[in-house]
Length: 123
Figure (cartoon, rainbow, N blue to C red):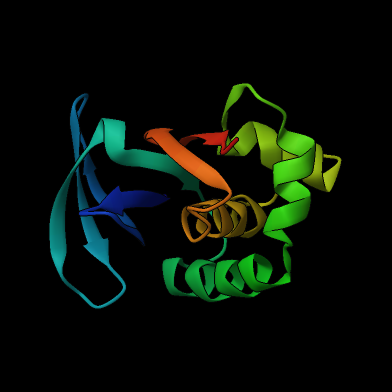
């Protein structure tokens, strides 16, 4: 099992070594072990590997137009996974959902961050 999570304002992915109720022991693709709060985990996935997920997500993020996302997101607060399902027209693959999260996070002029994995379109 792998996870996509937020750590110190950056998105990372890693392999779960131990899963407790409130925190996880995660090994990042660089080999560093981290203790991650369960609330910071945005996605859990089996495939692809964490390093492949981040590479694929960067490609997906670069192909998404943040202006289009801003136009279709409306005025409500939303979870990135919900917008990903709307954008892709189906349940998104892990790399697609992560890519959309990266795109939202990299577009502060279009989206305000409202919480872990939650955003709102800027007025």
